[in-house]
Length: 268
Length: 276
Image 1 (cartoon, rainbow over the protein chains, first blue to last red):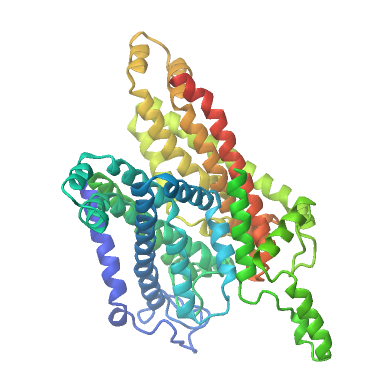
Image 2 (image 1 turned 30 degrees about the vertical axis):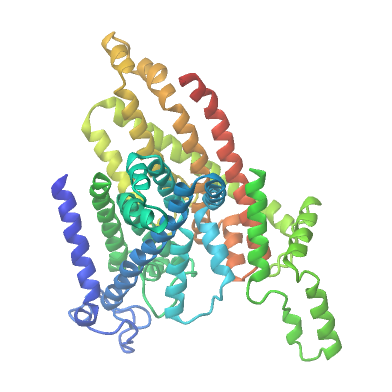
């Protein structure tokens, strides 16, 4: 399966590069409206046609990929850092700190993920500028997605606490911050890396769910989720198969993350 | 479990109390109201200014079975739940039954058949389903006019399949299973007597987790397939910023998942003790 993992990494790199180069690859801005061409079929000017407002779908797909593919890893980084801080501290300190953190983790994990997200999202203003909606959506994912990772990190940190490495470091006079930075964090790096990688596809899919429900990225800014909302216009299903382009890209990207993840797990 | 629920309640009450706009009433914008009337309205809202008092009132009402009133739908939350819960239970129940039947069935087939093709086909289907958001699956079901409830089953299925397949495959390579096979026991007997009992505790734990998964999938499914359950109610509450309703709904769903997890844990305990 090594070739499949390599192909997945190449595909991810290509999609990532295309999204970064959206300014150069896209024929128009994601918000530019070709008023004379609403709902146009694919052509040499508009490879995926235009939407009902006359916006070029190919351009929106490229920019939407940038939003989803840059911010999902950012949210995953945030949640991994939170998991490292919370789970690492709980596992390493043990005692009542660990018990309290584990109770909080149990609580967060017992809340169904989407219920929790929409509850917290509803607390914040819903009519916000598009950029703010992107920031809120991915910050929420990052801030609320730490629990499962924290549990894993906590278990690893607990095992580390009683390990010979830490015992030797303590015996040689290391303590506090030095012990944490020099011995604990480097030993937790593989598990954190795996948790980071696991979170990315989860956050991509959750953003898509939220945006389709109207609680994610706001118009006119595109994301994979907001682009998939076009599928609601199902009367045109048979006539416009190109509407499925965002779905195909999403499925391919998430599959590639899963394939690449198998490799990461081997590393961990 | 009670402590976790109380903590969840406190968290929910805190969220409602601290949410922007709490304590303001649309009626205050009515230009016909005098200043005294507006002051009286504000005074009525100030009753629950203190968070501890707010939570105490919330718990006292909860003890009497009063879950408050929905701000957007102008109906008691209890009545809304009574009307919509059966619909969600039906969807979630059907989804869980379907997901488990397909997931466990295909996992057993993949492990027992020893032909790579069955494993590959089921694995491929599960991989694709794992990569599609529940909302998109619901939309696709609307497009092809298929029953939306089945989507929950398709969301549950890949998770059950992967976990069950790994568990059963591990159990199938244990020495006592190899001995049983070598002694000439039939496949069905090996599965029922030697493989499933080993994997049962973890499968029971997975049953608890799958309940949470099914409730999560219920939101997009009910919204997009227009099924009047609590998932759709939660979405309406979120869109209308009806926080009291939303927090109550979340608490109830949390209680259900906690009960499901605890029941699964209790059911798995004798198995684990037997193993020990």
